[in-house]
Image (cartoon, rainbow, N blue to C red; front, side, top):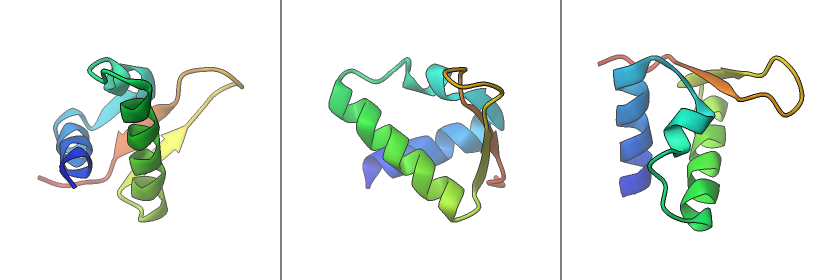
Length: 67
């Protein structure tokens, strides 16, 4: 899927980034939802680590994807 490849490439390039920053280039609610599901899948497969300090804070993402 093109969106999965985009998110993996973004993670590979940025290493540590916020979910909010990743969403800046999304153009619709559907793209936001798909991106969120991709983040969940990448977390499940161990390619990224996510954390959130407090409820409603931005989600911080650390990539484990190597170039």
